[in-house]
View 1 (tube, rainbow, N blue to C red):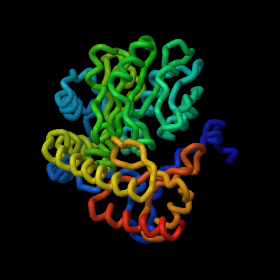
View 2: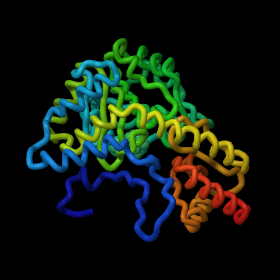
View 3: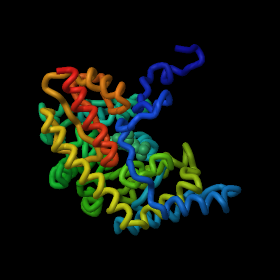
View 4: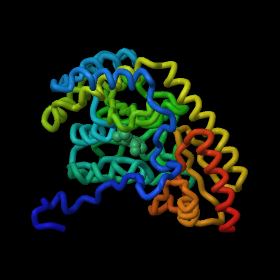
Length: 357
Ligand code: PMP
């Protein structure tokens, strides 16, 4: 704690992202990155932007990307917002829609950034406990509770479980006067986007990222979709913090990526196929798994401590994610890599189970 810090800076417990180690080369299955490169068309667009316009400021309203994203989802341009990764879009949404006077609801097991943002914006998080199987209890979002809004990732992280759109529609219907944010970071790996619910639900904000299914984590592009009223709320916050949101490279790269549907389909299908194969093999080794609809598996061995397995895998050059958090400290989150990477993971996992049993 420093005397120079504000009470806020002193009180924050910053989010700790998955490690990006530099000591040796690992097979990195710990931060849900995409194992395939971004669309070659996106690389081409970024290279061409780098060779031409970097002298100039980018477009503060990000028109080319807003237009492309609106077209992609059949929305109007006034229903689209873009930012530097969905983490930034989430921060703007917390600031724009949640009132510090009342609690904001989210599951107790979920993306741990939500707690950090709640603190940053002086909000009161109310954690809704998921059940034994990590299912989100819908009755806790009945609309009768005193709260300022709801945020749910779909699929949830790190459990990888997906809620059907009918459940989301029912939460939206019961909370018409409060904003419900659906964080769809992993939606392209087997889920159906809630964007189609927007016309009937002006209280719905859907947030997506190009970091996962589009393999552009390094470019930092996130998007939000919702009614004009909600997008205007986000713009009010953005224009006070960071009016030039996206840089030129990100703008052009993101547009080209959204235009390359064939490459997007091919690479996401591949990740899904590999996930299904590896899930079967991991189950065959005696592990318990959730039904993943994301680009990662959430796995637990009935007899071996997850931390031991994590350390053993690390020694063998395989990095997965271990959470030293209540309720999930017996689980590991394993991102889906290429088939070769996953074969190496399976071999190391099999050996580790043998050594630790
Ligand atoms: N939401 C969830 C649920 C995530 O897991 C992540 C990635 N860690 C994000 C949002 C943020 O992704 P990005 O900032 O790269 O768009």
